[in-house]
Amino acid sequence: MLRTLLLCILALAVTASASAQDSLDVTVLSRDGHAATLADVVNAMAEADVVFLGEQHDDSLGHVAQHHLLRAAQEAYGEQRRVVLGLEMFETDVQLALDEYAAGLIRERDFLDAARPWGNYARDYRPLVEYAIAEGLPVVATNAPKRYVSRVSREGGLDALAALSEAGRATMPAEIIAPSEAMSEAFLALMGGAASHGSIPGMPSVDGMLAAQNLRDATMAWALHRAMESGDLALHLDGAFHSDGGIGIPEHLARIAPELRVVTVTIGPEATPGRDAFAIVTR
Image (cartoon, rainbow, N blue to C red; front, top):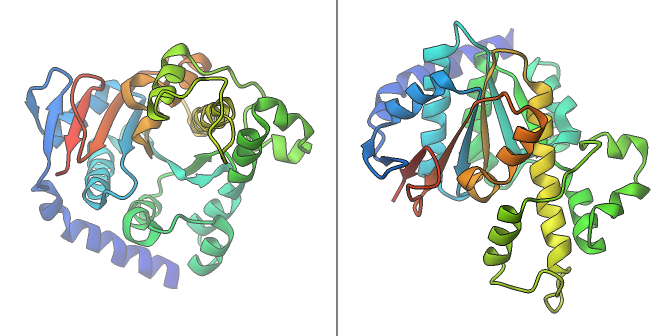
């Protein structure tokens, strides 16, 4: 009863804030650089199965924009399609705790103890999660467990996963395709052009870090696809580098399910048009 009351209060709060979000002060640009609106982004979802909302993790205004888009997607399409919220911010091995919390079986404090939320969860991600739960939307933990990502990075490649238990390995896809040339080049550029087979003093090898990045991308694509049903509209929140320009997670998703229609959006102070369907500039 208390859980139901709290969700009703949350729903009223979201509705009350709708007018403020409708006037969200951001700049939206289409791929060709022309001015667009948040409504244009929502309209584009009509022809999509998956929408990647690439973010800067510490950009609070960007998270408000994400909340707006999630709410707008549910209002526009929720009666015809199930809207799914996928989150890089939770790892696949905490999905049970997330499901139990969404079902009202455990308290929020117990959920947070089990789910290892990011430091900015309360401010930036909790509003989206609570809105999704209030609306009955699936919330999907998509990221690879950090301990395994770290092992791959330190050991220099995906062969490091071979020693894991069956239960550990089940938190990630059985088959992980190597990163594309485009992703490899983008990652090396991000790392400052370090040689792909070299190393940085005091750090894992660049190859190891690229393999770890690829593990995250592959797992996020796999977990999101595994949670989707035919006809769903999935919105996935991830760091922009994981989906910018259609590389990273979208590439792995295309290998798993090439029939899915994908829209990529970059959100943040430095978002620029040209690589994705839309850029939402928050500065």
